Image 1: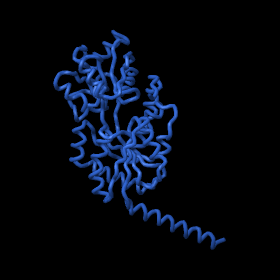
Image 2: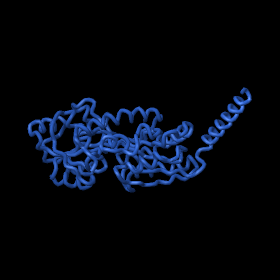
Image 3: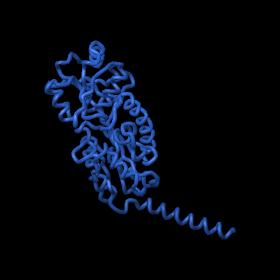
Image 4: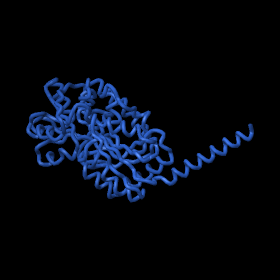
Length: 323
């Protein structure tokens, strides 16, 4: 019996050392970087800014694999079913990893169970913008107007369940007012109709509306982050404008399949944090209205655990369903 125990311990030590060696040697081959959206979008832009400096640091090619469809769920399912070896990365966001849990009746993965968090990469607030004809220059003005004209004001978004839509629903609940939601198939047509006065206001990305606010065709009122945005520091936050605690962010974070070795996760986390700390990447992200974040895997996990119930409640209260 003692001999058997010694053999078991010997082999356990061998496999433990082998696993450790594999972790230390990571990466030994190209890495697949899965995205849930087509090329050209926000997630794609963030990922492509990371690829070159990370390839240089890791010494292996990082191949972007765009797998759009089902609101990002197709890409999420592919990742969840991939080998947990560190060679499959997934750039999740607030939609795929948080709101989809309530937006879709049936999900092919569980965001907390099927993934291991690596790092929160970047965040981006929405900007509350109105058509200049609306007598609104501050959040309090919009709240007062909505209360005076219940259900008569409308706001545009790039689609049901998107960040802009749910920011509007969160605003409705926080201010206890009523608006009509007008969903579009994408953000471009929504902004065009807002500029032409077909809709009253919207929560939009800074990059899509700031050129119009600077030309006077739209009026910027506030940002949806907890602190003022470096992109538009002159704008107050919704929270400081009277709706305490209000925060609605678009965010991008890296996850890998659950059970990926912690040493591998630590290596990926360290390299991404190093890249995010460079002035070059910060400036390139800021040019798109995006703020570099970074941090520990457990910090991203804690953040995700708060985002899922927060946005699930907003989805349920709004009655939104995936289209």
